[in-house]
Length: 76
Image (tube, rainbow, N blue to C red; front, side, top):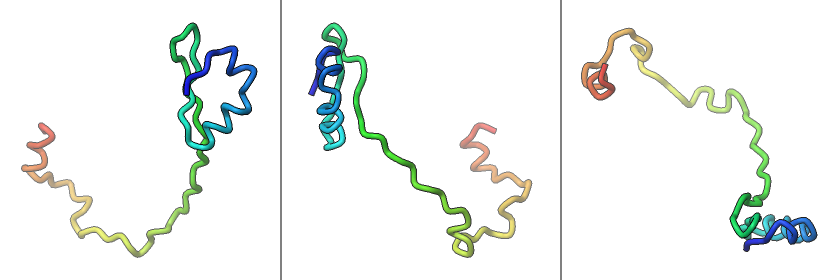
């Protein structure tokens, strides 16, 4: 749905509810879309070490030798 600036000022609560319900709400100024009202998503808290013991690398993972095929792909 698209609402003009005046409508957005007077019906902000209803527009927020519609956006929270998943509807796309666009606010226009002089008939031209300027902002989109979207629900705020909280980021999940990171848990450091959650994959400890599950990720394994080879012995030469951090060696200084460069694989020529890969170097060529990157233009090195």
